[in-house]
View 1: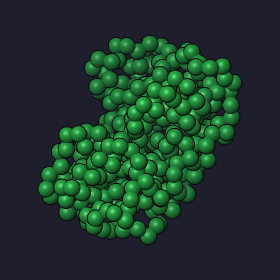
View 2: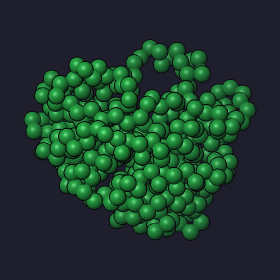
View 3: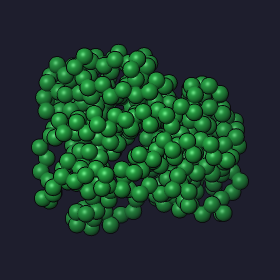
Length: 357
């Protein structure tokens, strides 16, 4: 069991600012999907490009990665990259476009990425919050701006992430209608995932100690990546993520029976292999939760957190909800401040103040 940074009693998960944001995701995504914004123009920008770079950092990178799967399903050539990599080693060429995810408009390398594209005349579709930190009036016509929601109330971003992915899904659907399935089902799928909270609260109590490993292949790797960020940031528990086959070829030898496995799967060609590798961890004494639709059964003794029936690309959106809820309940059980990026710890706050995000 990890040592607490300070003596803290268990708190209620509803005390966190992140909690109402998690609960509001179905309605906010519905609002975004029905909003009057230049979606058609943005979709045309992407569809006319020889390649689309999907770019972001942190949770916004996970949205960018999910978007790359959506756009490829719509028939486009799309590749994800962190904004740090994009701005530091620019790969973009004439004829290409950028789909940039930047929730606040204040992160260093997202801003640098946008500036680089403007300087080179590369068309950009910018997905950002309402009242973004970007100076929108100064942007050239080559930048199409799409808004998601207002500022996430917690540093553990939730509602900004799912609304950004919903925007990406709408763009992919405009490029190739029906390629992802019915994007109108996103809000109801999020609502269904929220109904798993009682099960997830039980899981958080059962997983009171041990390190966590999030596994996911293909589009579901984006959910595993997001689970890693959310659990680490909110609860500060030891956690990592990996694509299952890569996990098998080396890191799997490290597992111990106190490890907790959070496996994400979709109805695709990777499901059987993900199930087999998850079973390997369980055969070594690990407890596992299987996050997937009813049509994708997991190992027999794994706890199945059932998601809606969606395409693998759309499933990336509701799949993050169990991870958000698990992170929140783990933090509450340990009395950890889940909302403020560990700035309640003076040493970390002082160290963080020496650099910019």
